[in-house]
Image (cartoon, rainbow, N blue to C red; front, side):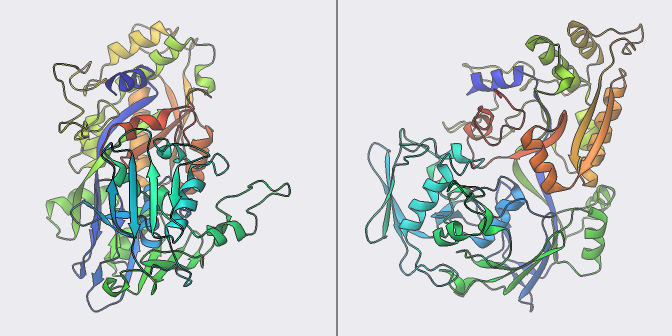
Length: 508
């Protein structure tokens, strides 16, 4: 995997900025809420004093609510509220049974057999059995569904279209056959792409099939409120770009321990408006804080302001098919991207925008990622030494080094290390409308301008941004990745050519 990371970072397509932590604000009345290292937030056991309603903000308009099609962190939080997997995470970050009662694994580590809880129901009262998981996993893995995360099933025999996942005739057990032992398989069983969906709802939705019988829109069933789900809450109202309401699902297997009756979401990425609503008491929980308020909250030791650990990396990605690299050899394009990375002052971004003690990132794999052998992946040892102080970029700005790389790519400079007018560099930086992301974009813009690079900034709505970046309709874009489980393969296999998360367009 170190070799794979070497290959990835050699392209220069990923410019790491910092390793994530997470911030949120929460009223003292809120108890029982928890989050995990992967950014998923769990509200099923939360309470809010005497109120049975929690008013909160996680993000703006979600891109997809079908758990098989989602690839965003806010979407994963909504999936955890509305759906469920065989396993889930508890408040200590440990995997615990959810819709499954237990599991066994064969001596060779290749066959998992999950036993379902008794009496499981969908939100509409239909029985929920292992057959629903057989359908859901095969659907999510299939080429016809084209889920971004389909590759996460590639360790199961028969991937992608003949997945060796079989429910017993009575629907009590689900048997899964792997191609090799997988230490993180329970993490996968707790991941949204592996959640159960209701077959009749999926396949009965208007727009699901094209006229020729092929699948036209696999997520057509989850575009409006009222769809069948199986989690602690169910979506009952959705005013697009404004609000969502989730109500307690009386058919949830652990409904007796779900204290809240309603989750009322404000859909916005306007940090100032969100913070004002929180200050006014209109919101009990917010996932966004204006950049210019963070330091004051830290200095005052505000007990409602939380900084928690995450496992992931904030980074910038380059579209290798951008016209910016037209006429350049592979080596020259790599040199250009690496040069841009050497010009960015990561510590300044952490100090002035992040402000919550983030660690400067020097490679894509985050600090603290496990190596699968009881150690830490991002560490030098007898078998491997990182190129530069634990990464591929120095934490320090290196203007001279960047200029030399750009010269090797065919660009000319004057005596003051400014780009010649005969070889300009101009491109657009794509980001979503959020003051923190905008501030980081402006920092990068100023850093690149030091040598005369002209970067313009384009900000668009979150759900539009996700799809534009995925489609490769950009030159350079802000990006971020929170690990889905604690293993470096999660940060590496997303860059294979056929991965739906391959936003830089490798191999396309």
